[in-house]
Amino acid sequence: MKDRFDDAFDWILQAEGGYVNDHYDPGGETKYGISKRAFPHLDIKNLTKKKALRVTQDGVIGNQTLAAAREAGPKKIDRLLAIRAAHFASIGKQRFMVGWMKRLFRLQRFVLNG
Image (cartoon, rainbow, N blue to C red; front, top):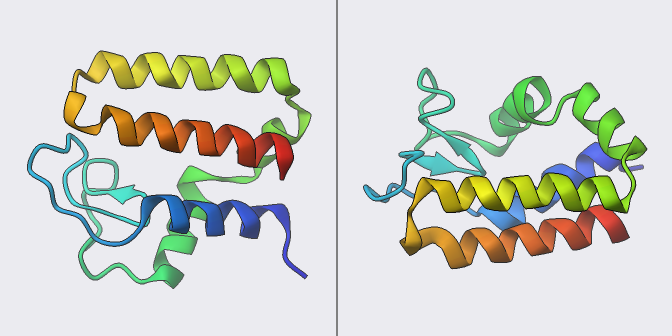
């Protein structure tokens, strides 16, 4: 039986997609939502889903994150996502803004509706 972590990881795979190396992207090479900037030691281009799952469990969506998400109500989630939206705006990459915001709204629906 799948748990909430598995659901979150599946969501990330769908939202983030496969390998991208857009020189305008501040994260650099990215695959499955894992960027070269955040994980410079990884071979992003050849990253497997299995390795991405381990990286995600260890450093992106750990037990503390899942516990905090379970305890957060809609108001707190809205506040955290608003902070994230402000962060996106501060990066100043208009080229990516629409996609980032669409993903943020999909994330809000996922978190609140399961």
